[in-house]
Length: 406
Image (cartoon, rainbow, N blue to C red; front, side, top):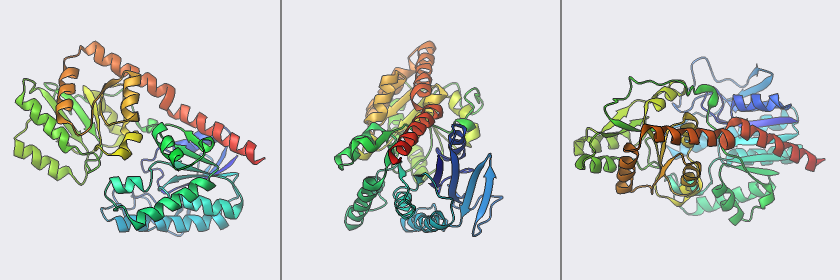
């Protein structure tokens, strides 16, 4: 099949469904053309070696990658970020309608909703079906993260989402929770495909361990990722405070990353006088495995919001593949996966007491049991959440679409 993959996020940016995804689709017999833009995420500046122009075409391993110009913004301004999304949507629509080779199917990946609407317009114009890959439920995610307040705008977004859902040939969702949420919006179950996200396996070397980064005199519980509002990590700081006051001072929470709440978190640690919390700067994806491998336990934490109960935080897959025990402080499906895989302990989010108790419980386990937890998690990932499993599911879905179209 000839696939037109439309995504604003693409290599060399960190994209789950980027170049390697396109390569895998080609490997199973599909012809892939990618419509994207010039890389700038997450820093908000065009990557070295790239310069915006009206069009740049590369042929990479037989995959045509077309880069188009956009307004660049990944900062705190919701208006500027939306302008970035919309500018990509407009130019991607024009190119896909009039310049791209006619596909058999359109695969719309990123950004949320905008690219779904692009696929709807292009699919209608060119009379081809489209797949909409839902990575965030709008407007729910916009409200939960504070980007917009519930009102006229969110109602308009909801109506537009429903239109895209109605017209899509298939909708890919990353969790059963997303699937159930869309069923409540009267999306037919038959067009919903739950395909778990995978991590960027090509850039992760789980065989490496960087023991120099973490102080092995501590039992290190490591969080790697965005230090933002949605993660609600102030509750982890409070858990560290409880541990400091208890008989477990040698348990340390380690944060690797950056974000809008980083300064607030560091200030809170300083105010409480905690030496069992450590902040480390962001680490490249190529080097993060070594740091993850040096930790004793890996932490996932999100705010206690209904929208997060039906999602699976993207770091979950990377943690599972790493083969380390996981402390999951997220309600809903993410916690259920950890329990089902017997890969760690799940607690309520934003609950310092439960976090502290779980940290103590994991620190007292024998190293053999911690290793067994990690091994079970990696086995679960390989069977259910790996790129190989995901691409096989996508391939099966695309062939079903082609069969229906014929």
